[in-house]
Image 1 (tube, rainbow, N blue to C red):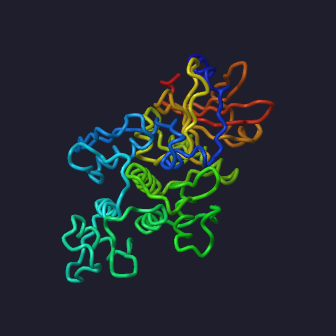
Image 2 (cartoon, helix red, strand yellow):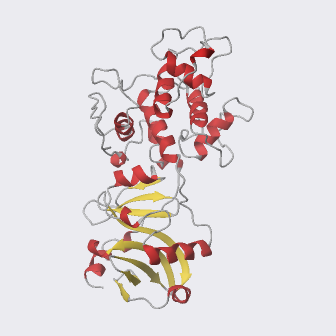
Image 3 (cartoon, one colour):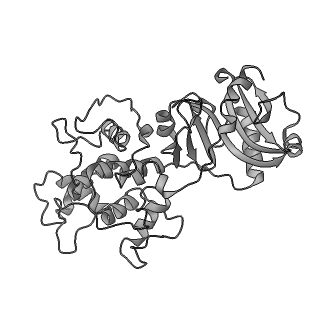
Length: 366
């Protein structure tokens, strides 16, 4: 395969198995515990006229990407003195303001104040708008408690309502029984990978939420509020996906121009990856791998060069699907078929008569 083969030799034998695990969720577990901070590759810069830089947000903190995004979008404005309020608990009033900056709701002043404790409050209009939309409620006694600290239970309910999220599977948190007032919301956030619990399987719903944590949760909800299918559920779906890729370079949900983009730009389009696997070594030419469902994106070190999926069909089946390949190449650990399509190609690695994975890339990266 010439140059293409020499590049492929560096990583075909270093495939990282992508298995979803709550302890390695990018931007979810990290938003809830300071013990897992090794995924700071998440961070990206958002092009915006808003050049807000918060001096109290550590450059290598797991929440910085979310904070930067929300600041650039004009959602998080900080305390007005260059401070984000890193480490501070977030209040119910602040959350009402943040949600409304994103949704842009306008309160109906004719309805008057729904709560006895928000008159002349700095977030009065936001609270009224959010409450009228049914996203936040009071405590049943006529008060909103705008300066009270938000709990994780409250956070779950607010995000579920604000983003119209639906639960995809049954809840598994040990400390949130069926019948709990936040059960559905908590389960919805978990199944949408917006928030996860601790390693013991608890959600810890009465724990207060810090400002940087809420930024990550809020960003996760924004990123998940997209209509992409990252799953391949049958051989027929796989065949159709690859047929389309050979026709126009669309590899499942990923456009051909995703190749060459920085991880930050990929995330702006497709949201936070389910898992981010770091390179197996720093000395060798091994990739970082972003995992979206069944799709894997190999980054060198943060630029998307290869998008691939696992396969398990025979060589004969592949040839029945797409005919004879244009090239055959490989190295000591892998052989593969190449189907050239102008500026890009599909490569199918095989061993013992079976196709093991299919990838798309551009010739310029080899």
